[in-house]
Image 1 (cartoon, rainbow, N blue to C red):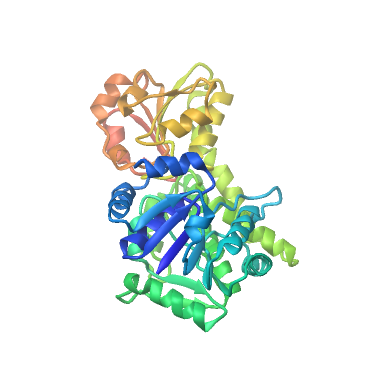
Image 2: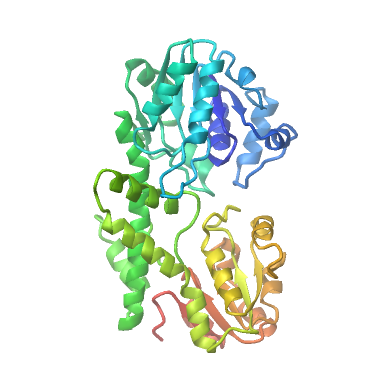
Amino acid sequence: MNITVVGTGYVGLVTGTCFAESGQRVTCVDIDPAKIALLQGGGIPIYEPGLEELVHRNVKEGRLGFTTSYAEAMRGADIAFIAVGTPPGENGEADLRYVLAAAAEIGRHMTGPCVVVDKSTVPVGSAEKVAAVLKETSKHPFDVCSNPEFLKEGAAIDDFMRPDRVVVGVASERARAVMAELYAPFVRGEQPVLFMDIRSAELTKYAANAMLATRISFMNEMSALCEKLGADVDMVRRGIGSDRRIGHPFLFPGVGFGGSCFPKDVRAVMTMARAVGLDFDLLRSVERVNERQKRWLVEKAAKHFGALAGRTIALWGLAFKPKTDDMREAPAITVIEGLLGNGAKVRAHDPVAREVAARLFRGRGVELVDEPYAAADGADALLLVTEWNEFRQPDLGRLKRVMKQPVLLDGRNVWDAAKCRAAGFTYYGVGRNAE
């Protein structure tokens, strides 16, 4: 099949590359000439483990190409994926202008029958709007379907190549047959392709992210209760996670969730609910707990020192999660803003997000360093914000030597509290402060 992917951001580039890896002919189109020039020159605009190798191999073998021309991208296309951004508007609802603009260009440049697929995360009813645009702009028959992505940043290649399920919303047998053939190489085991109506598929992505966000906020709320009652949240987590009805994933307390999906999708579900007269109280609480949790590190540090003015605070981790440079709504932003607002000096290290952080905090006096122990040198406290693997087993002796004061605030509960305290550190974890 000939596949067109509109958008070379996170979802579009991973989608196009993985389909090319399965043997399809893929052309990715983007209106950003700088991004396309970078890709054509062998560069990668995002950080994702394993992606660069796959892009280079499939470009070399002629299965993957990049262009700014819709005419070139749509020539002979059997399937066109829309994978552009849907940023939240002022009311929390996803902004569809880029999706509908892409649909219009697809319609104008179709050269024959085509299945047009919403890959972007879009509100319920968006496929109908895309179909209306295509009806106005295309001279060829088309089908519209919804195929939401469930990619985890840092593990996107594996998620795509070995999915636990593929959700596809269709309204015709032709679209169903095309999508079944397309995904056949990825579901050779027991992983299902779940065909459903389009509106259900559109809502499934939001429902999944809202549920995962709820689990995180639940455990963060439970961690606050543990601190008040003198319990250990890690023990509580193990106890409830062993229940097969609950399970362990996404039960880790910390400094809140961020990224491009959970925050905006939680708000989008609340907005969709309000539009039909429902008040989604549960998700409002999820969002409120998450915002409170992002302030935990600063509040704990301020309580320990009494005041943060003039203190040097080190941060390990800036991206919203490991294995990505994505800082969209990252807890680190709230942490740094809080520290600066309290008069502290901030020195930070992240393995890959330094350039992103430099743009975000340009002119704010945040010192970004290339090595984690350089960040801790002379610091009054070290705050763990993102649990990169290289931060999980710190050299406590080295930290003790370079830090001004031996104070550790573990925002991800990955350090051994007993070892830290035995090494002479004052240690704070999330919901696990009992000696």
